[in-house]
Length: 323
Image (cartoon, rainbow, N blue to C red; front, side):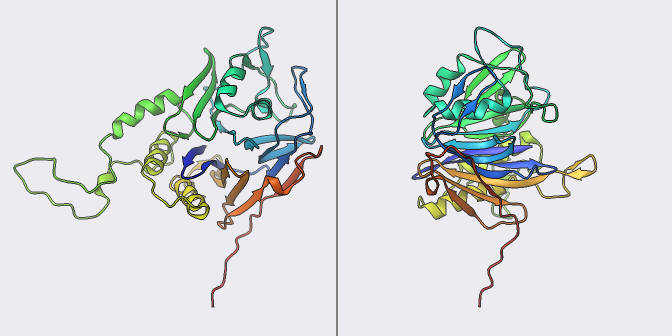
């Protein structure tokens, strides 16, 4: 279970919570412009836009969870079980394996318009990475600096939705989440007044009563509503420190704590949260054990190299002792 948001102040920011019951030891991974991608459909891309994101690197291949290219286009893949459907090979389209989708888009596109053109020829095909790593059932949020969409490969075809909310969680499909918003039209960040009856005086006994009814459970539909409300009502200064801090505060409003969501004999929790500055090429992150914000700037590395660069997450808590 995960939550992704697209947020704009002076700059544009994109990121996500990754919620799961265990980690694959993912790392912040930079794919330089000359690292070759050999796709299962036979196409090779030997030179492309540089990428930065969180990936599980296997067989020297970056299996990205979320990533951004040097043009500021960003993607996050979120769990979409029982709804995601990967189709048989189609000779009339570009057949792309699910694990290839993020690099397929980010290597070739600089904005949403170019993404839509590529998607018009795309077939997300049923292909596993290997016998041990099966295709994950995912849907995707994609955003450039101005526009955001959701992509869902389902049994009845590839769905592309404009996403004016700038939020995505998991099941149900995205059109349900948009419809579900209507049930919370009365929720407000404003002070409340008595609309119950003109015949009785009712006074608020607390601040924040306008948000009564806002869900607080961990289900994906509730997280969508809570994240949307928090993000759309968010106020902060537009400098970098304030923007990044506020971004993580929004994600923290729907973070999962160990012990609250049992999965078999383990517990799902927010393994990491990410925030990508789409103008500056900076990947910020926190982890469950380390709430200090850490940053990686893709431009501090050789983007014309042919070798992947992977940096392990700093996941030990750092506490500053003030004297």
